[in-house]
Image (cartoon, rainbow, N blue to C red; front, side):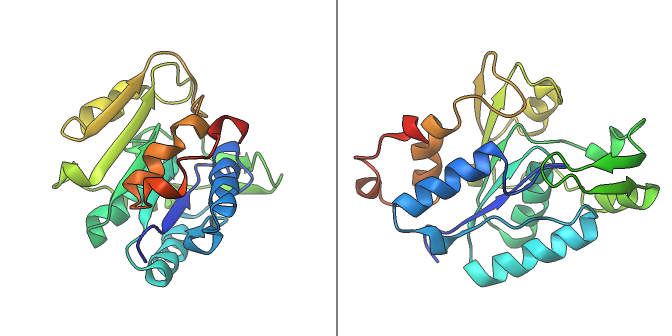
Length: 202
C-alpha cells in the first residue's frame, strides 16, 4: 500500500506518545488513517516483533517510523524486509545499555509494571544487524540535546544514511509535527495532499 506507515514507539512508551498522536492526527486529517498502524507493543522484544511483522503483512511495504527503541526494531525489520525506515533518536545496540535497568519497569502511559529480565536483553541482542546495506532507504533524525541516548552512537552507526542532526532538542524530539511533511514525502504520499495543511497546529 503506497503511502502506508507503521509507527513503532519506544521503550515504556505507547500509541499515546506525543509523536504518535501528532502523526495519527495528520493522517486522520488527510483521510489516510486507514494507512497508518500504531500498535501498542508488548514489552518483550520477541512479542513486539511478532506484532510488527503482522502489521507489515497487513500494510504491504509500509514506511517504518521508529522512535528510540522503536528505531532499533525498525532497523531490524527494514533490513529483513527491504523496507524504508525513518528513525527518530534511535537506540543503537540497546542490549549493551541496559545495565542497571534490570528489574521492575513502569510504562509511562499505561502505568503497567513489568519485569525487565536478562531474557529481554538476550532477545534484543538477537535483533542486532549490521549497519544498513542500502543507506538510501533510511532517514535518521537526531537531536543533540537527547538526554536519554547519546546521539553520536546513531550518527556513527547510520553514517552512510541521510542524517538530519539538529542542535538542542530532547529525546522526545522537539518540533516533530513541523517535520511531518518530510516524513509523508518519504512515505510516498503526494505533496499536493498536504500542501495546504498547517502542521504547527498538531
